[in-house]
Image 1 (cartoon, rainbow, N blue to C red):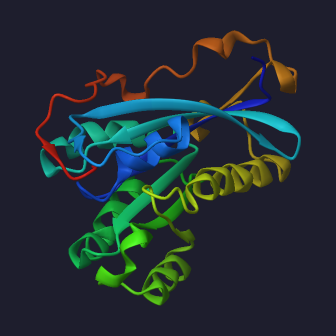
Image 2 (cartoon, rainbow, N blue to C red):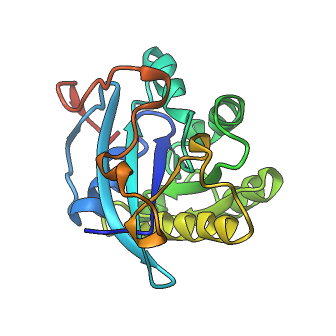
Length: 220
């Protein structure tokens, strides 16, 4: 299927915050109560429509464990958007956001759009981080903010699509889409050659360490 642009996304944050479940809900519209911990990096993709333009989202879901941070860092390069996720019921995942953001700002291109996501809003009665704290962190650091539930799908669609909308606005404002470090490729629908049909070559040439195989636990 033709598309105007292809955007590369990366999902980052501590283990167990629901990164893989957000991706699964967005791409497959389903929720897994028990999900294997992500080992390295997993991948998903989906087409969306932004202002009558077809956009292909290529989404890399990263492991949150410290032992995989070096692999995760290689995927920042060439990303147009990042979803920075914390768990509203686990205070420590919010407190670790500054470290994740520092990593992103150090290793990604400066034009990368970052969406801050407070996940697990369906269990708000266990909340340890207020919505206001999330909003304040986003304001301080120039991020877009939403609270989501991968379980009920609340705001999941909006998180991915709103990020794409911001990237589209940057393109309309003159962002250089010929620079692959910006994580954007032109497709047939925008007058490109179509040579990008195969998608991105992984920036940094890190091997894809795929899916599953980890210990079953909280959705990671």
